[in-house]
Image (cartoon, rainbow, N blue to C red; front, side, top):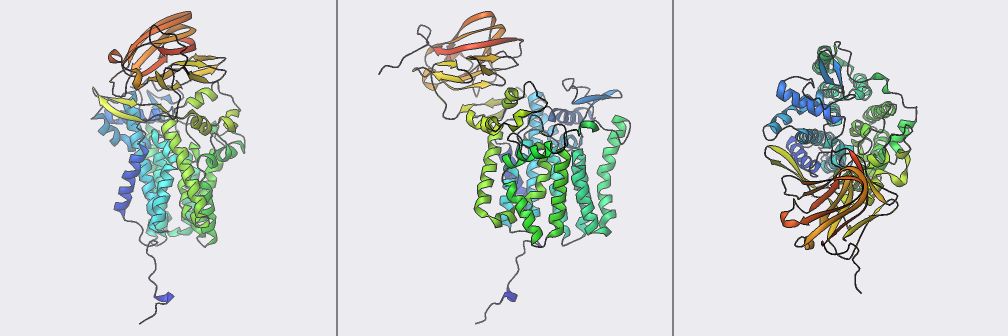
Amino acid sequence: MGVRTPSDETPEVFAAVGPRPLSAVLLALVLFVALVSNGRPIDAGDPRPTERVAASLVRERNFDLDEFPDVEEPFARTAGAHRVSIYPVASAVAAAPVFAVASAVFALDETGLALAGKWAASLFSAAAAALLYLAVGRRRPHRDALWTAVVFALGTTVWSTSQALWQHPLAVLGVCAALVCIVRAQDDAAWAGRAGLPLALAVAARYADIVLVGVLAVAIAVRWPRRLPLLILWAAPVVLAVLAYHQVYFGSPLRQGLAADRFSAPWGEGQLGLLMSPAKGLLVFTPVVIMAAAGLVRAFRQGDRWLASACGAAALAHWVLVGRWAEWHGGESWGPRLMTDALPLLFLFLPEGYDLAPRLTAALAALSVAVQALGAFAYDYRWERLRQRPVASAHPELWDLGHSPIAFYAARRLVLPTLPAVADGRIVLREHPIVIAGPRGSRVTFSADALRVEGADETMEDVHEERGARVQDGRLRLRGRYDGLFLRVTPGARARTLELRLVGEGSGTVYVGERGFWSPSVKWTAYPVSGRFRIRHPYTFATSGGPDVSITLARAPGTADLESVALVPPNEPERVIRNP
């Protein structure tokens, strides 16, 4: 009987072969479902022009926004005879097929545009994670590649930026595709030149990636100097297309919509904030990145010096650049949005970080996914409306640990599961807000800075403030569009005749809206108010619009300060005392 010696060992083949493309496609499909599982688009000002450019390409075969007057400055500007987006249009071009399919199913109105944009962005993000899976799988066992891709997609701002048509998803897709080319070039140098196409795509999607891409391009040229002409040739079609767009719409191939003078943040402020800010820090929202960075260092020490150096230098250069951006915090978004494009360069080495500390890496990965899931299912811009209105130039709220977005939404305990549906040719978002372990009662009052649900007769549940409604001085202050209070009539109270009583002070019109998860529309009742008011709104479930009740200003001008809200039978007092 022979003895097997080390020289007889069959070497592992993952480094030369990698995962099969079919497994990457299946992974992308699973991740796409996960990214859209919350059901609702989380739109913002920046993605809206790109969504409308995609719609314009489908409807009118052009890039202008003339048919979308709702996109105003600074998100659009007049160039020649047309209004155009200030942002790169590569994401709109790539998303146009998704918008074309969507337009055949539902109208591309405000909600339809946002949902189509979310689907396109989620598709790009899922594909990016699948490509990272292929890249990691050529260096590490397939199981390492699989969990790395999942953590990358669901434990970073890749998830949050997939909720609307930001520039990042397509840029990240380009970076991940470039990593596949770079890793494959270790065995076949022809792939080094092919990296030019995805690198150019990353810059075309997001011009701020120019430094990141430049560092990678220089590194490729140094490692494979004979492939430099091919690198340029592969990049040329995308570069020429971008320059042609600039020439047609801005009058010069070197002129574009973004202002170059926005890199004005003090040195160090943005860089530190992008790492450590309780509201926007990478180490706060994606703590597992610590192990990815440690893995990069470990790969360098183990001999993979060129790859680790190239990725590390590109990520570092990107961090320094975007830290100088005046809005380094990324505006209304969940987490360090501006660092998203550099994450593939670090997560390529996450398995090496796992080798150093498996349990710590697993714990940080789980925490990172939990933080991003909180954003996907709970984030609704309410933190910005409360903490950043009015805007303070120094942004002290970004450094307030006790009132950070993560702490705010975790304490709020509100999740917003949503199901998009088509009704009369339009998208309807069927939302079912749930306050986890929330109180029940029949009356809502307001203390110094919080609402209280009390009363022995449990007629309402899932009570929470909406949009910018703010509790101050014992009142709920409604000042903006759709600021309001939400409550759900409990199942046990729906067979009874009830009365919604509102006490407060204001001017304008207070609206009471009734809807249900399956309701096609909201049933509104308007109550004009001037000065002190006591509103008695009859509620019978059988004739109502549904069990979900909103008290709001809607779109109407005016103000309202609510002192109490009660849901009780018509002839009973509001303060019901429980008998012993």
